[in-house]
Length: 133
Image (cartoon, rainbow, N blue to C red; front, side, top):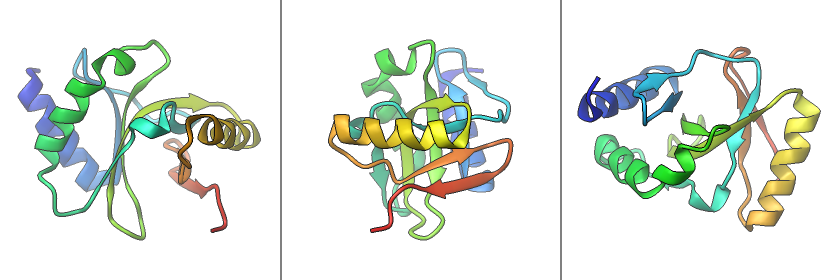
């Protein structure tokens, strides 16, 4: 699959399913796994209004973050916030176990200076919000 077709597929699957997990370097989509996913680098997350051209934003995000997206434990994560409908484009990672994932995500939020809104488990199709405020 060429890069432009990959971008179209990511955009379509994000809109259809509420999010995706993929490796842009290979153009492959990851199967749903029983891990809790969240941004490894929250300060690099793009939070975009639902009116953007998602394909253009995906292209820009992938090009800008190629080095991070190619790390072994990372992938491109897309997510649509269920309340705001905003698009989130992340350099995602995953952690087994809900408690460990919540603890890790909160620690990374503090270290990186930007709160991670939620963690997501694709196999369980479940979102857990991390903060009360």
